[in-house]
Every structure is written in structure tokens, then in C-alpha cells.
Image 1 (cartoon, rainbow, N blue to C red):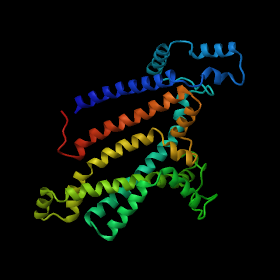
Image 2 (cartoon, rainbow, N blue to C red; image 1 turned 180 degrees about the vertical axis):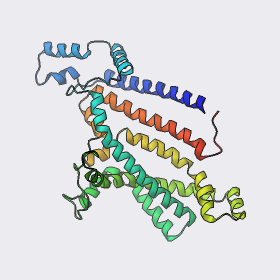
Image 3 (cartoon, rainbow, N blue to C red; image 1 turned 120 degrees about the horizontal axis):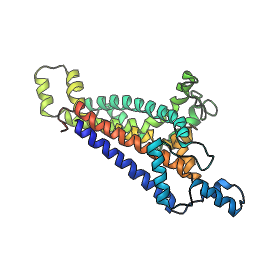
Length: 320
């Protein structure tokens, strides 16, 4: 297990370097706005643009700029400074990260609880009224775009424009440390909007896997030994059927921690996703590079944790 983890950690480092290099090449070799021109303001003189280019290091070849960037990142964990407003990229990312973490993890808890519960009941009672209603609703939730669900939720339930004002509207987010109660209520609607399609997908995925597992020979053997049906389902059935759920959850949570652009934009939540979107609009390469690397880090880290978790969830999986 230790050898496997070390090997995967080395691959994580290689992947992060590859992502950083690819992002750097894309935004430096493709035609984009000149960052020095953007920094110089309206109708700047050529001398001012040249001076700003020299200050930012934009007059050097791209590979020299990339080497300087990676040297600062590896030695000092420094992502550089924004071309748009000259603030520290690391400071801005870590300032917006709590909002994205709150949104992603809260939604993950909701969709896992709902998805596993609905999927288990539907698998145990296939073709029942509950199963047909749940799977029909799941199909609708999967098909509905998340930004559309967000706008509908705001129109129906927000406290400012909602027809049935139940939850705070867009722009009401406050940090957890500032007001825990307001933090919780302001994220309720974004949590459920973000969790809707994921919960539907997980419910359908677990239903299909659990129905297949419950017909296996070892399940019949467990029943023949006189084990209670609840123990057969929870200890034998779900434990075998939940492995794909763990895989999907690791990938989905990793992607969401990298930035939930649509939900953060709809509900005006100051997170990593909205920061990345604004940076792309402004051709702000240091900020783009920082948010992309942060997203890649979360994805590969969650993948590693999922692979390690397999050995504990599924006794058939062993790493050497």
C-alpha cells in the first residue's frame, strides 16, 4: 500500500506540472489581449506599455516566463500577482476558497444522503409506486440544467423576488466565521440546487448496482444462514454496490472544489468558480493559472483518496 501511495503521489506532481504547462502555453501562444495594455489603461503611450511589459516579465520568451513562474511556485508557493489589479493570486484564491468548499461539501452531503437512501429503497422495492415516482423524478432532475434550476429556485423561493419567500436570495452569502446561522440559511437553496442532479444520478446508479448485487450467490448464502434482511442489505449488498458511488463522488467533489462556476454565478457566491470566470474574461493569466492548478490539485487528490478507500470498502481490492 505504501509503495502504491508513493507512486501515485509522484504521478500527482507530474500531472500538476503538465496542467500548469498546458495552461501556460494555451494563454500565451493563442491570441489574447495584451496584459500590459490592459494594465496601462485607456490610450496609453507605447513607452508605458513597454515598461509595464518589462516589469511583468512579458518581454521574455514564454518558456523563460514559465520557468520563472514555476520557480516561484515550487520554492515559495507563490502564484504571482494578478495582471488586472496587482493583488496576490494566492491570497485571492484562499480568500474565495471557503465559499466554494462550503458550497461543494454541503451539496455533497445532501446528494449522498438522498441518493443513497432513494437508490436503496428503489432497489429493494423495484417497480413499486415509490420506485416509479423516484426514478421519474430522477430523470427530470438529471435533465434539468443547474443554472435553470437555480434561476427557477430564485424566482420561486428567494426572499427578494420569490413567489413563496423561504430562503435568502442571490448575493446573501456571508462567511461561516462572520455569522454561522446566516451562512447556513444563505447556502440552503444553492446546496439543494447543486445537489439535485447529482442525487438523481447517484440514486439511479445505486439502484441498478444494488439490484444486480442482491441476485448474487453470496447474498442468497447470507439469507440462507438466517441473517436479518437489514444486515444482508447494509453489510453485504450496499457495501458491494457502493464502490461506483465512491468513484463518482470522489471525481464530482474534486471537480466542484475546483470551482462551481454556474451555481456561484447564479447565486452571486464569491468562490473559486466565479473568480476563474472573471479571470478568463479579463485575460488575467496568473489568476487563471492559479485557479486551474487549484482545481487540478483537488481532482487528483480526491482520485487518490478514492483509490485508497477502495481497499477498505471492497475486501476484494488489494494494492501491492
